[in-house]
Length: 222
Image (tube, rainbow, N blue to C red):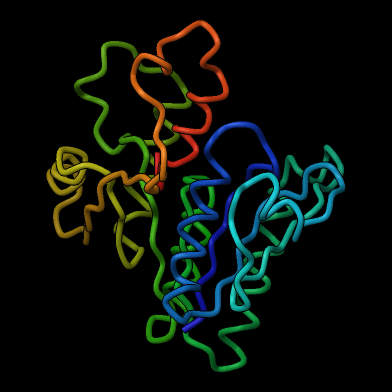
């Protein structure tokens, strides 16, 4: 099976988002799967060197990083180029007879996943990695346009996918209650093991920025 991860964020973007997806993608690769990790290209750099020097991840022969340059501002308004390139790649893989597992944390991409899932029910598995919850806005004190848009997307698209990956049990329960019959799998946040973790005293200190960043980079998902 080919595993495809899609992330709209830019390569080498500060913060944990790309790093988290990269670690998850590499986990599939280390388990023997062919993995393609799509993200926005970001500034020009050597991808192989970035893996080791920026992300602290050793290259793996079955992991391919696909950095997609952004299109023009007008073109991006009609759909991100990284989404289009990833979906073209997935469709071609399916046409070539491959089985594909397609994962993303990008809610805006889930309607495309739903349509692909309908067309390729036997060869494709589509997973949304949820980091929030919008299917039921009842408990929220304030609701804006984006909240309503995300609610409509979740309620329409998620039941049409193979499943949702929740990061907490409470989040999974919310989805099951709001969308009965939805397949939900819970996998909690995890961390890499560091040989010499910083002490809480160091992490609280005034010069702890780099230590805190290092600790947060260990998060497998967030």
